[in-house]
Amino acid sequence: MNRKTMIGIAAGAVALAGVAAYFAKRRNDRKNFEANAAQAKDHFKGKLNELQRKAGKELKNAAAETKEAVNSAKERANDWVNNAAQA
Image 1 (cartoon, one colour):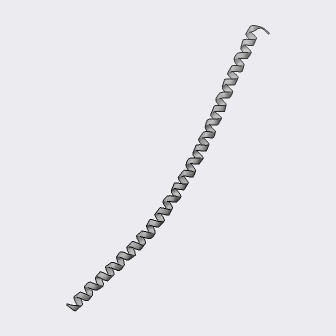
Image 2 (cartoon, one colour):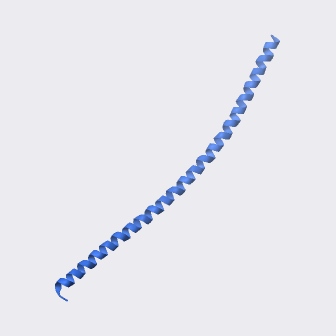
Image 3 (cartoon, helix red, strand yellow):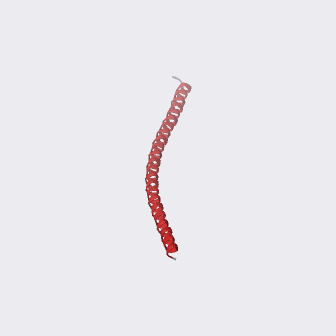
């Protein structure tokens, strides 16, 4: 083989190695992206479930507080009616 052929083969091998490294990096980048996306999805699901539980508790508390307020208002109204009837 002559020198130009050997240089051409070496240059081709280097170029091929560069292309292979590029595609390997892209593949790793894609895998990392997919892993990060899955992790973010799981984190988001957890936060959403936590918010749903908190909202459910708040709704129950609000219902109980509303019932207490209505009962208190009824008692005051009955007291006013009774006081007005006695006067």
